[in-house]
Length: 206
Image (cartoon, rainbow, N blue to C red; front, side):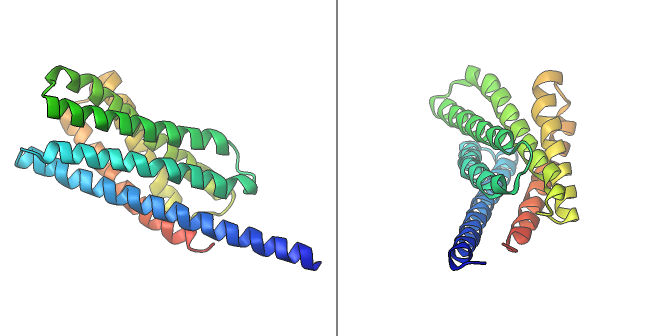
C-alpha cells in the first residue's frame, strides 16, 4: 500500500469513527427525550396539570434528535453499499418532522386551549410514531447483511419497530382499544430504550 493510499485509508477510518460517534450521540438524545416523555406522560395521567405539555415537548425533542440520527446513520452505511440506505434515511427524516409537527401542535393547542385541535394532531403523532418504527425496523432489518449490529440488537430493533408500526398505523386507521394501544405502545417504548443501548454499544466497535 502506497503512502497516499494509507493516508486515505486512515482518513476514511477517522471519518467513519466520527460519524459513528454522532449516531451514538443522537440516539442517546432521542432515548433521553423518549424516557422523559414517557415519565411526564405517566405523571399527566396520574396527577394531571402541566405534565401534558411537558411530555409533548419532550416528544418534539425526540423528533429533533431523530433527524440528525437518520442522516448520520445514512452517512455511516452508504459507503458500505447497504440496500435502500437513502429511502431508510428518508423514512427517519419524515418521521422526525412529523413528530416535531405533532408535538408543536399539541403544545400550542394546550396553551391556547384549542380542544378541537387535539384529535387531528394526535393522529399525526401516531403516524410519526409509525414512521419511527419503520425507520428502526428498516435499520435493523438490513444490519445483519453487513454485520453492523449483533443478533440480539437486530431482534430487539425488529420487535420495537413492529410495535411502533402496529400502534402508529393501527390506532388511527382501526381505532384500537386503549388497553391494547398503551400495552403495545409501552412495549415499543421499552424496546426502543433497550435498542438504543444495544445499538450504541455495537457502534462503539468503529
